[in-house]
Structure formats: C-alpha cells, structure tokens
Length: 337
Image (cartoon, rainbow, N blue to C red; front, side, top):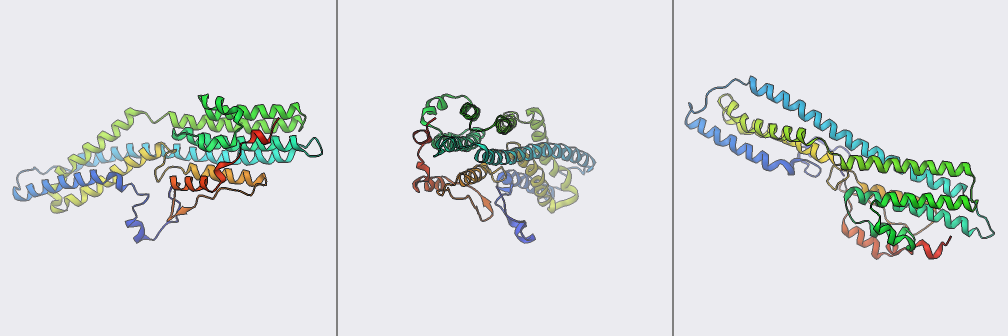
C-alpha cells in the first residue's frame, strides 16, 4: 500500500510506484500506434476518412464516464468498508485484551490459572487476526497461527473448513472455562463475549466482500465499451486534430483504461497490489500491541514503509523466524487448564 505524503507536482507527474500506468501502458501504446497509423494514412490520402461530427463521441464519452464513475465508486466503497472492518478488528482485539488482563482474577497465591487463561485468550486473539488475513488472501496460515495455539488443537485446527471461525469457538470455550473456574464475574464475561461477537461480525463482513464481486455483466459492459470507444476515437478526431491525434487519443486511453484497471484493483481490497490494504502490517501491529500488553519483551519488528511503500516480503518473514521469535513455544505445555 502507498502511504507516502503527497509529493511535489513534478514528482507526482512521473511517479510510477502506486500508479496504474504499468498495468495499462500496453493498451495506451496500442491506441497510440493505431492513431498514428490512421493519421499517416489521412496525411498521405486526405480523402481516406470522412469528416465526422464529434457529437456521437462526446455522448458516448459522457456515458462511459458515468459508467466508469459508478464502478469506481462501488469499488472504493468496498475498499473503504474493508478498511473500516479492519479498524474495528484493531479496536476489538485491544479492548478484549484490556478486559482480559483487567478483570480475569488470580485464584491462588501464584495466580497461575488466571495468568494462563489471560495468555491463552490473548494468543487466540492474535491467531484469529492472522488466520483472517490468510483466509482473505487464500494463503496458508499455519506458520503464523500455530505458534499461538496449543498443540492439542493443531489437528482439529488443520481440519477446520473455516479457521478464523474455529479460533473464535476456542475463544468462547476459554471464556466458558473462566466462568467455570470463577475467574471473573458474569457481567465481565458478557462484555468479553460481546467483543468476540464483534470479531465474528468482522469475519462475516470480510468474507462477504471477498466472496461477492461486482456483477460480472456490468464489469464486462464497461470493459467492452472502453475498448470500442478508444478504438473508434482516432477515426472521429483525425480529420480535425491531424498530427495531434495520437497524443490526444493516448491521454484519453490512459484516463479510461486507467479508471477501469483501478476499479478492478480496488474491487478486491485484500490482495497484495500497491493500492490494496496492508493486511500484513495491520495484523503485525495487532500482534505487537497485544504481546506488549501481556508484558512480553520479545516482540516482532514493525513493518515500516520503504520509499513510501508499505510492503512485507518473504525475506522479512524469514528474518523473523531466524531471529528466534518465530519459534515461540506453544502455550499448551506451559499453560494447562
């Protein structure tokens, strides 16, 4: 995701990272070459193309702009809703951790049962965050999730059809254990359960966005109309614009093809493209905050923006594992019920 501040006008004009230009330059080049070919024919044989009125192209351009604007608005709403849901997840996990650490009591001199339940609940919250990210990106979650879940649950966890939902059920069972052991009051258990319910809402809403794209027929209509308009445009402009036709057609192609490609990128906000959500950085931020609240000192490194681009490569992941943090001992041996 692009996170840098707005650059100067000159830098903004030539910035490629985060721009849609790398995706649409083949179409722009094709339209410009066709326009140049038609312009050369018109220059060599002036009567080759009749002088057409620009009114039909104006009307079609206005209609196409409305279509593209509607599609971009729908795609941006999906992107913004997804960002709001992950913001809600940050709020829920922090509030849940604060309630767990504040209101689950120690029941003996050492306070082992209370502290063990606290750690299990917080660890499961972190595991849920990573599992949700991997589910939305259709990637393997085990490397990020297993170290926060007791080994006794690993087999059933790998068999679960919906891993984030399975982890929410484990959270509910752990709260039931806290109630059974009278580690906290029923009122506070109800408040903690409300936070788990809110995480369930976030999970369901993210799954809805991920599994329900914009109607394909509308996307196909806009895509075809964009190509037809840009291919026909040189024939209508060459008699009036002459040698400037390739430049004007290239700019118009950049605008329409760029809007089409940008809406397609924003339509799926959970991917890895430059303008999609930085889910890895968000989940890492949640992990750091929750582990710090537990009082742990071995924290993973923050994912920082590099040259204005927030990214997370496989080399970062390998460095975390090799540093010893990734080999965190599972909670089962240390925290028994």
